[in-house]
Amino acid sequence: MGSTGSIGTQTVEVINKHPKLFQVVGLAANSRFDLLLQQIKKFQPKMVCIGQGASGHPAIDELKAPFKLVRGPRGLKQLASLAGADMVVNALVGSAGLDPTLAAINAGHDVALANKETLVAGGQLVMRAVKRKKVRLLPIDSEHAALHQCLEGRDPSTVKNLILTASGGPFRSHSAKQLHSVQAQHALNHPTWSMGRKVSIDSATLMNKGLEMIEAHYLFGIPPERIKVVIHPESIIHSMVEFNDGSIIAQLSTPDMRLPIQYALTYPSRLPSLVKDCRLDELGQLTFHKPDKMTFRCLDLAYRAIESNGIMPAVMNAANEIAVESFLNGRIGFLDIPAVIQKTMGKFAAGGKISLDKILAADSRARDTAREIINAIIKMKDRR
Ligand SMILES: NC(=O)c1ccc[n+]([C@@H]2O[C@H](COP(=O)([O-])OP(=O)(O)OC[C@H]3O[C@@H](n4cnc5c(N)ncnc54)[C@H](OP(=O)(O)O)[C@@H]3O)[C@@H](O)[C@H]2O)c1
Image 1 (spheres, rainbow, N blue to C red):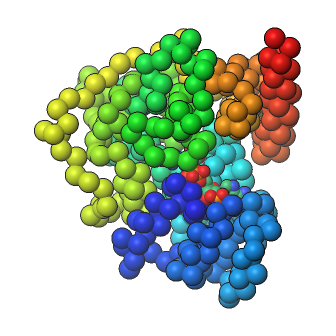
Image 2 (cartoon, rainbow, N blue to C red):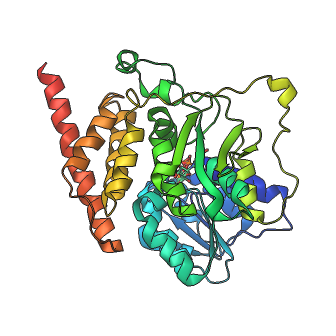
């Protein structure tokens, strides 16, 4: 799911590297229809799902091949539960990935999850379903793949802290004053990773690290206060685990998402990959420093959301998706992103029991609230 995106196309590269190991039985994409057509021709899947973004494409009539064509959110759930699949790779963007993830788990499929918003919005539900259905949930995020490797075979009671590394994004040394005037094209220019548009902005605001902290909390069962963040601009150490005796175990590699993708797809085997060797002698030095939480406020908002629990992480995530979209469209400034999220969270009550319906309702209400706040910000700026 999301086969035409940054993670999706790199997943295809990993599959092409090991053609005897994998058979692609389903594909889903939204707007990059020409690329989807190429993938359909190559893999001849049993089912294809297209989103709203494909409607009206002149080549849509070409989709008469012998596969089942499904559409929209319902189609994604059908695809995710396709009989005969062993694993679903979820490389969708945004909380739209939650329902299909649950569908895949409930159908008994293992899930390789890039779509971190799934765990942020519905982590409790997803982890409960994983336990109930006894399936594997393997993270496709370099940090969580690293933590998974560092934790493998260790006694959980000996873990002191998880340490997530963050590149710091393109504005890592900017002051709040400098951030006032940054534009989307600057934020999309990431120093060490080439990613989709939404996650690139999340990386620039440090919300990406906040989402990852929540993702790590659910995946590894470690409380948020024991998940630390350190800025590591070279992106060579992908994350670390600190143990009770003071040892820190880290996973290092050249920054390349094809490694965590392959690790998830072939786990527990380790096979030769497309990733360049990591030559530490050529790198020379690795550096670390504390994140500037005063300037990059999204990180603390994520800690606040998970501490409030209930629907709050879903509210925060939805507000972030709307704020990022508005920033990408040039409607609001970079520093408006945390302001929109904080104001939206302020309109919702903390805690409470959750269900899928409650999460989806909160997600939808939070999107409306964030849009209202954005309209008010724009009006205020126009008046000045
Ligand atoms: N990129 C990275 O390096 C990276 C690293 C770690 C984690 N992640 C996470 O992985 C996820 C995907 O990120 P990305 O960078 O790959 O995003 P992306 O490049 O924007 O790709 C998103 C994919 O989802 C598809 N899609 C969106 N809405 C859809 C719908 N309604 N129905 C079917 N398909 C739909 C898109 O289709 P079209 O392209 O056809 O529109 C595209 O294939 C995000 O949660 C991100 O945080 C990404």
